[in-house]
Image (cartoon, rainbow, N blue to C red; front, side, top):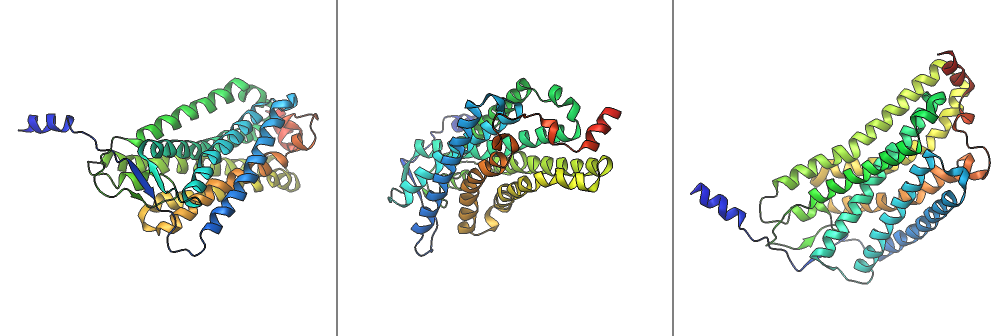
Length: 324
């Protein structure tokens, strides 16, 4: 009988609905104004990231490993917002809340891939900053174009595989209403009729691998940088060097904290709060990235100027490296 049951399970036909219905925010008056607001944020994000990519591509002085990561971040922001916001407006402003099964999976794939790559791209940028400040004399050796390209490529491969696994093989025979503003993995697998335990495991591991570990790495990097500067630089030099990190840390907080709260608490928070957290986190960091990571950097302000990473480091830190 056990052999029969196992063989029967292998021959189960997975039932895929013709469409899903994305419900979005419920109980909010004049909710269309919120989606129009997201649209304007999207326009600013598209313009900012397009300018960033064009400037980095056209100016040969910006062909450094750091700006390879910045270019990839701008591309991810542009691609992710372009995959999310137009479809979001089509669903809620044009009342096309029905989305086909295949389109829903594609929607899920692109949204989660770009959201995850934003996290790992921040890791690449903060690794670059960590090496530049702690080991300025070895920066050119430790952080090369080949290394940065390999690191970013490995992140892309890992994220794509992780998101493909998250889709899983699910069979649906109950409700097709997704209580979110896009095809959210957590909301989809809970609608399935068959065993979705693997998807549950993925949903538990996803925030740890994609958000918690990068977030902890970035915080530890800054703690290490702070301790190093305190030892080898004067207070004024340390404050000057760390001042450039404040804006970056604020962006990390804007990006990671809402996501960590949303994906960690899962169903313990109200669906509307989850939707607002995710939607704002999806559009605001891509809008702020061009301002914080590019427009405030000296290399972009002075196109064609010297872009040596060590020129802005505290003198005491460079001398300490020479002493070693």
